[in-house]
Amino acid sequence: MVTFNLIHADWFHLLLNLLRQLLFGILLELAILCTMLENSRKGSIGASGAIYGLSLFFIIERLNTMKTNIDHHRFVLMQLILLVVFPMTIITSSGAILDITVGHAAHFGGALVGFLFGIGKEINL
Image (tube, rainbow, N blue to C red; front, side, top):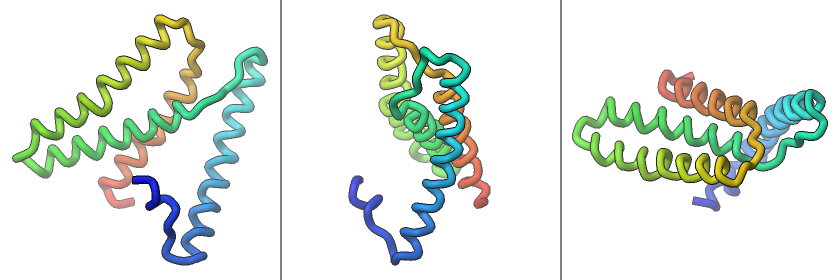
């Protein structure tokens, strides 16, 4: 689960991945800079936007699996509940109880990108 991110087919493959990270990273940093300029007392920290992106990508992928694999609807639904609904409910509730300031723009942006990547994967873009 961890090491596959570190393995590449060749140097060109690694270079392409690094270039994508650089391009997306610049866009992300510009968005965070705009948020911080809007309200200088509010900084943007953490990786929750990426977590929302991965969550939405996972949801889209699992829903498409349910569409194509009729025999495993319950198993896929249990995965969604155990791996997305429960953790997000606990995290959101904890944040509300502890009165933690949340960067909703980062969450929305991450979720939107995850959703778009999930849809793109399904239509083979």
